Length: 222
Length: 391
Ligand SMILES: Nc1ncnc2c1ncn2[C@@H]1O[C@H](COP(=O)(O)OP(=O)(O)O)[C@@H](O)[C@H]1O
Ligand SMILES: [Mg+2]
Image (cartoon, rainbow over all chains, first blue to last red; front, side, top):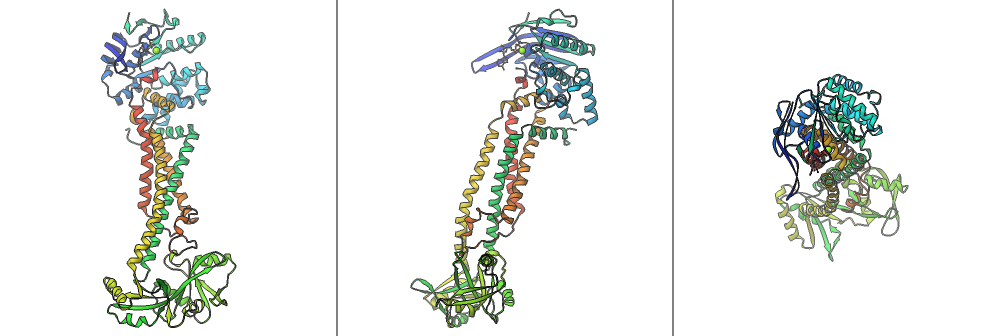
């Protein structure tokens, strides 16, 4: 489902300085697998997620996701790929605070001009699945952190993508809410989704629901 | 497919404008004000141009004035006979007219004498001659004169003060209308006899002589012949007058141009401000939209609608306000810049001249420019790598 081949990612800090965020990464994740990328801050976990989501391109090497060589995709195809194949739960959620819950959730559908009935059906499915229906009309900025995360998860699932990526999903949650996130992971796994979680939270280490843990350190897989 | 109008994006754009209420209202207000200013200036300029053109067209082809001690003096009516003899002259009319200073309002009126059976040298006078009562002491007054007299309670008649200090009462017989208001506004029409009495002009004298020429190409030749015949006269052709009118207009439109440039300058400052960058919030929003699957062109389409809605609104409101300001309220303040020209001191209405070209020019000066100012920075932001949003 996901393959990284000899991937190097460099960031140009300025003209004569660059940071090597990923240093020759080779990695394969199968369909339906739940994988945890673990490692200290700055090790390169988020960079891997952004490559898999086609949010950025590798400096060298190849990224193949759902049989697409996404490291070669032109920009507009990358957008379509993100909308159709990837559900990204960002560390900072990346919701639009001045829009309501439902407006945020259907945001990925806005450019594709579906008819209203279809949008409603998709919206109701995720509102129910992630227990946020009672807050549908509220502005996101008035929600608690846990509720905002459920909105972010609902938005990531609105198009029923095959792959869910989550970046530090428990960084802003207390232990109770963190556990309910783990529960959600279980539900998504049951639907057959491929899930990659980047985290340094020990909560995820040795969990039943997690199939594999990959340790990253200084841009390399240990 | 994706080419038909996506109303969800339109809705998102409207929503986005509403979410930034104060900013939207502020930008729309400033834009509206600028478009209002620009279009007012355009409207006034084209109206005055039209008015001026019509006024000049109504002028006599040749005017002959007597000059004495370097000043305009009364001319002998007898000169007409020799002028009529000249080959190519169609007609000549001795005019009796002058300026009457109306103290109460501090303005000058133009007092024009006409004869019942004379060939009228102006088209507008033909109609007036049928309306004017030549038997009694009656006059027709222009709109501007009527207003001033009404305001000073001279509703039915007016007492002119003659040079010897005695009064002459003249009844107001009606309102005089010409093709353009500029032409008729400050005019009082009465019989030549009446004007002679008020200004104390003898029967053998006139204010000037106007000459009509059959062939337009002969105007200059005939003018120089008259000048040769009577070296103590000044012979003015329509072309001379056109030039001096044009000079006044050019000077006035220079002032307008300055105002216009200022307005345009302010407009470009807004454009520049918009084009020079987005707030970090706006950038973040674009990043989020891209990260969840919007294409660059989806983002730009949304921004296009935002810009289009605001600038079209400002355009329509600005134009409507300008139309009302110029043609219903007669452009107070702005018009003052123009109203000093010719001897005209009383206020006048601007003729309604609205051409599609002016409207189109205004549209293309504002709406697309503003939309571009919205889209360009968004485009720059949207084409950056989207991975900023994961930081
Ligand atoms: N835009 C960027 N410019 C320069 N350096 C960056 C940029 N993004 C990430 N980095 C660097 O790349 C490395 C990996 O970052 P990241 O993938 O965010 O790590 P993690 O998510 O594991 O904390 C870090 O050293 C970070 O400073
Ligand atoms: Mg990270």
